[in-house]
Amino acid sequence: MIKAKVKAKESAKPVANSKEEKKKVKKAEPKAVKKETTKTKIEYVEPAKPKAKHKDISPDVTVEERLKALFNLQQIDTAIDKIRIVRGELPLEVQDLEDEIAGLETRMKNYTDEVNALEDTIVQRKQQMKDSLALIKKYEEQQNKVRNNREFDSLTKEIEFQNLEIQLCEKRIKEAKANIAAKNEVIEKAQAELDERKSDLKHKKAELDDIIKETEKEEKSLIKESAKAEEVMEERLLSAYKRIRSNARNGLAVVTVARDACGGCFNNIPPQRQMDIRMRKKIIVCEYCGRILVDQELAGVEVLEEA
Image (cartoon, rainbow, N blue to C red; front, side, top):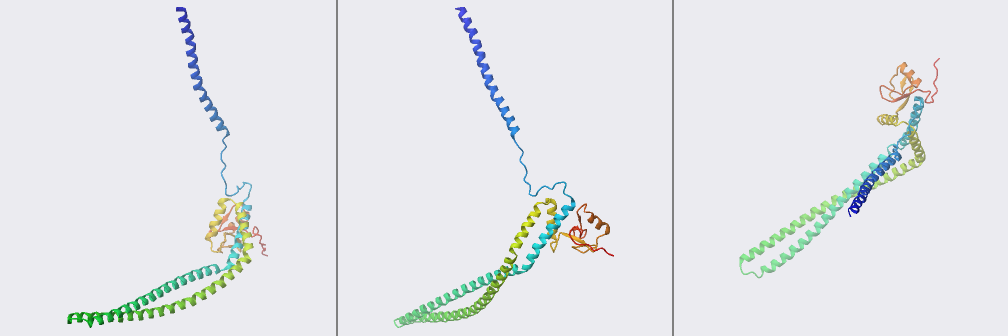
């Protein structure tokens, strides 16, 4: 019996050890898996590429090429400006006429509403006069049946009051009719002016539509060319060009040097600065107006040599 108990104890010890080992293995396995998964995730993650609005400018692009691109963009934008100048003030005139017509229509509507209100007032006053006449007739019949002077006097006062009401209504009716006549005159004048403005608007719109039809295709193609030229330019340079162009009255941001002067503000440029511009080693702006300066040769203008 003692030997059997010893054997049972010895057999129980390795079983307990095997259970503990199993628990340790189970706890150790998921940790190892987690480490492997994290490693695999880190290995296969790729960084997101930023989206660029403009194409990257390679360092091989020279300053001369950038100046040519700027001058080309300026030529396209100038052509678009000339097309829009042909329209002149027509778009603004059409807008002003539309606003004026809307104001006249609102004014006529208000006057028409006032006339309708006055006509309703006249109808009410007339009805009030009829009621007063009916009361006068009623009071006169009651006067024939009175028993004392007090009742007679009170009925007489009521009749006088109704007569005053009739006179007041007649006065109000006359005033309303005079106001209606005055407002109708204003409405007629406003209607004539409205018809004239509508006729002007029709002619202006037809003229504007004709101009737009003639230049629409050319303008659209130039706008596309301008967009393409902007895409290949450096973003910093393009923003500077647009800023200078928006501040300039004539929309010129890139000008040539002609007769020793800036083509934008016509101020004299020193000879040394002109030499730097002809060298095309850096982008030079006018110290007076801030426009970008290019030489005539780059702009394709023939330079006449002085004898």
